[in-house]
Image (cartoon, rainbow, N blue to C red; front, side, top):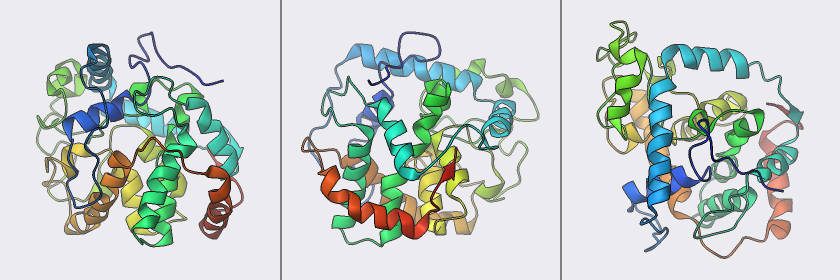
Length: 292
C-alpha cells in the first residue's frame, strides 16, 4: 500500500511529487539541449499551488544553519536501516504517487525512465546509474521526515538568502535572516570558497550524496548533491561562493537536470526486462548492502 503524506503541518503537499510539478511550471523548457515534451502537467490546480506555497513557507522558515547541523548529526550516522540497493528501491516504492495527473508510475519506474533516457543518449554507465539512483534519498520520508526537509529547491544556509530562491518572502520568518552571523552576503563563508565548504539546506540530495560519496565518480556526485540547487544552476545566484572547479562540475549538473525533469512519459518501462542490466550496473559500483 502506498503512503500518502498530506493533510498536516509537516506535510502540506498533496503528494511528494507536487514539488516536481511546480518545477515544471517554473522551468517548462530545458536549460540545455535534450529531448523535450510539450505538455506535462495541469498547472491550473489551485490546491496544488496552495500546497506548494505552504510547503515553501515551512521550508524557508525552518531550514536554518543549526537545523542542518542537527539533521546531519541525526542522519549521517546511517543507523536507520541497512539494506541492499534493491531492498531500498522496494522501500522507496511505498512512496508511489497517487495524485500525479500524468502518470501512476511508482518510484522505480520514474527512476528507470530517467536512467533509460540517459542510456539511450549514449552516456557512460556511471551517468546511467546516477539517473537510476538520484531520488533514493527520498527514503527520508519513510524515516519520519516531513516533506519540507526532504524535497524542495535547495540553497546555502549560513549566509544571506538570495531573492532568486522561490518564494523568498518566506525567509522573513527564518531566524537566520535576522542573525548578523548569517544574514550577510558571505555569512560564515569566504568569497569563492567552494561548495564543498558550504552547508546546503537539508534534503534528499545531500543525504544521498553522503551515502554514495565513496562509490561514484565526482561528476555523478555533483549531479546527486546539487540537482535540486535551482537557485544556482538555473538562476546563477551563488557564483560568489562557487570555485572554478564547481563551475566545471556544474556542466554535469546541467546535463543531468533535463533527464530528471523532462523524461516522464505515460508508457511504463519494463522493469522486469531491465532488471538484469541494472543488477550488473549496481554491482559494478556499489557494495552488496548500504547503510541508510
